[in-house]
Every structure is written in C-alpha cells, then in structure tokens.
Amino acid sequence: METKITNSFSFIKKYFVLIALLAAASIYLFSQPQGVRLGSDRDVIPGYQGWSGDPDTLTVYIDTSFTAEEKDSIRTAISRWNDAGSVPRLRETSDAPGNISFTRHTFASDTLGLCTNSTDANGDVTSSTIQIGEDQGGLSLSELATHELGHAIGLADTDEAANPSDVMKGTGPTNGSDGTLSAHDSTELAAAGAAAVAEDTDKKVAMNPMAILPGEFAMLDFDLGEVFPPDVIDQTGVFVSPIGDPYLFVESAFIEANLLRVGVFSDPLHGSGNLYLAVELLFPEPYSPMRFWGTHYIHMFPAEPVTFECPFSFNEDDGNVHIDWVEQCTYPLQHPLRAELVVDGTEHIYQRGGGNYTLMLDPGPHLIELYVDDYQVNNAYYAQDILVTGVPESEKAIDFVVYPNPFSQLCRLECPDDTRITIYDMSGNIVCEIQEGIKHWKPSLDLAFGIYFIQFRTEDQIKTVKVIYRN
Ligand SMILES: [Zn+2]
Image (cartoon, rainbow, N blue to C red; front, side):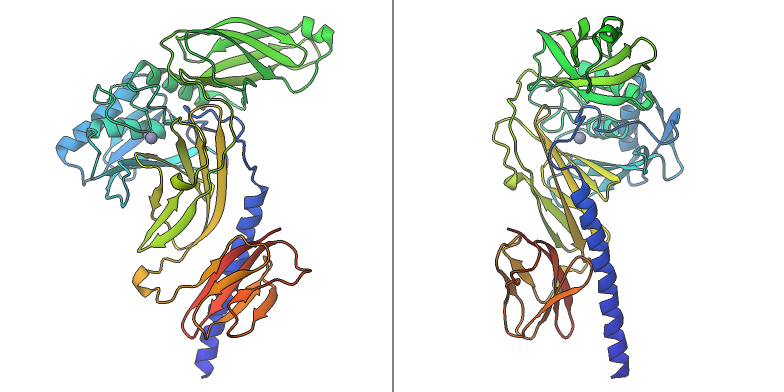
C-alpha cells in the first residue's frame, strides 16, 4: 500500500511538470504575432540568413541505404547547385553526419521528400536533414534530391502553375528537364546567396496590395516609417538595384513624403514569386544611411488580397503525428497554396507533395506553427501546443474526450464512469473537481476566460486535455 501511494504521487508530480511546461508554451504561443507575417518573402525561405558561422563549404552525407547508382543521382543534384554558383559550396563527405544528410524514409502519407532545416537561436541554419521517400511520385531521384537540396541552401517552394519548369516548384510532375535548374531557380539561388551575406539588413515588403505582372512597368511603394523633413528628402541619395536578377530593371527611384517609390520593369520571362531589391538611402548629415532589402511579389496570375485562416487538427497513432490543415483552410481563391511547418521554433519543415503532414516527434509537449501562403500577397498563420504521448494506439484502452473545444458555457466530458476529473488553471492550481458521475464542466460565472487543463484519472490511466474557455 505504501509503495502504491508513493508511485502514484510521483506520477502526479510528473504531470504537474508537464502542465507547467504546457502553460509556459501557451504563454509563448499567445505572444507570437498572429495573422500577417511581415517580410513573407517565401521563394527565399522566410528569415533565411544563411548557415551558422557563414561556412564556405557545406558537407553532404549520403546515407549507406542508397545504392551506388542512387548516390550518383544525388551527386548530380550537388553539382547542379555548385555549377549554378551556390554559396556556400556543397561537398560530399563520407563521415556521418554531414551539415546536410540524405536518408531514406517510408512516409505514412503521400509525401515524396522532406527537408528539415534546424536553426539556432539567431535563426541561422545549423543542420539539414533530407528524407527521400520510397515512393518518389514519378520524379527521378536526381530531380527530387535537387529540389530538397535547394531548401537546405535557402530556397523555398515556387508556384507550380506559374513556374512549371522550376525544380523548386512545390507540387506537380517533373519540371520537364529531369531536375535541371530553370532561369527562375537560378535567380532565386542568387537571392538566397545574397540573403546569407546581407548582415543586419531589414526586409521591407512593398505596400502594393497585389503582385505586379511580369512584362509590365510597375511602381513599388515602400513605407519608410517616418516623415523626413523636406530639406532632407531633397538632399537624399537613393540607390536601388535588383538582387541577383537579370530579368528585373529599376527605372526610377525617389522619395515622396514617407514613401520610397521605385519604378521597375520586368522581362516577360520573369518567374513568378518574389523580386528583391537592394535599397540604400543616403541622407545628409547627421542622419545615418538606411539600407534594406525591398521585396514584393511578381506573378503572372496576381491574387487579390483576401484574409483566411489555416487551423490544423492534430492526432497521433503508433508513433506518427498527423497535422491536418488542408480540409480546414478557409482560403477562398483558386490559387495553389504553400505551407511551412515549424516545430518548437527551430525545426523548419518543407515537404514535396501532399498538404497535410505526418511526422515523428518525441513524446512530450511541442509547439507547432503553420505558415500558409498563396505564393504571393496572402498568408495565414496558426499555432497550437500539442502533447505527444508516444503511447501506441493499441495501449490506449480508454478515450477521454472533451467537446466542444473551445467552449463558451459548458463542455462535455466523455470518460468511463469511475473517472476522477480535476480542472487546473495554467498555473497548476485546482479550479474545481467534478463530482463523480457528472460528465460535463460548467465553469462558475466568475471564472476568467482562458486556457484550462482537464485531468482524467482512472485506476491505471491519467490524461490531461487542454481546453479553451471563451466568450
Ligand atoms: Zn519543397
């Protein structure tokens, strides 16, 4: 008897630690900016600023599960990026792990390949893992490997509909050249390389509500954030040039009130996605110069501005975590969408093929963030704390269910009859204990709206479910 009490006590203590962790993660969640992601320049991966330590060379390790012939296909991918001028250079290593590592993986979903970039606290990439699916969906290994390697060196997916010959297109069949880089892939590589060496340079997205069209003149307006005195504006030198982009021309650049107005003309062959401008403003003394990356969207099918949401649901089975968002996304237009998933703030996941994610995560709490955009002006963000139990489905004898969640007046609790139910707040304080036999929770009128944890306890199981109580 004595032993039993001690055991169950330590079990409960563990849960308090978990609840505290969840509470901390939730606070973090709500301090995140919701909705608009500033600087959503997504052909170059958002926030990409190169690899930690600015290496000249990145090593690439190819797992021993690949045959000699398959290794040659991956070497083709390495050569393509080097030939196109990748900085850093890529060099194969026989020592595991490399900075970038290729492995084989059997995906439980229709994912063909997946690249995970791990970043440090500064946001610099520290390592990259590329998983190649057993089913490559009709793509050759050299094409799929070239695509995933592009993510590791800072390129994001491009819009298949507008850029069918890009190796970096996020969906669809072969690019038609077995993974050879398109002109657009090459300009994106140049921009990614410039992003890696641009130190402390802010990015500003032009204020235009829609993407500009390739082949036309357009005026891009950047908000300079403050109104400069007229005499300062008169004496300000404005220097604007395209970054790594032979298909874009700057025709004019001047300051008007608090706007920098840049007239650009693009070649009709300009790829659809982003454009990048190096901007330098030289104010007279005593003002210091201002430099930033100007970016905006250029697209052959411009999307009108809309707002939408991208909530996801989470469930777990036998070691796999499913993050499903495609069916719930409220995007109202017909443009294709692109997603990036970030786990615990440091694991940035890009996948080829399929919208929903199936991942393997360690048991414990995780913060999952999802960014979705239409490759141009519209984007949405959603974040959720999840708790991965790691318990195989077969051992989950009993289901504890709370619905609706979020709820406003009363939530129903589905559980076996002899379950003890306790409600905790985010600090781990007991809010109330539900009388045995009652299968709902109706918070008292003076209880604050917010996040609560419902703990179910039976003889041999304990489970905590996060609920949101709101108006
Ligand atoms: Zn991709």
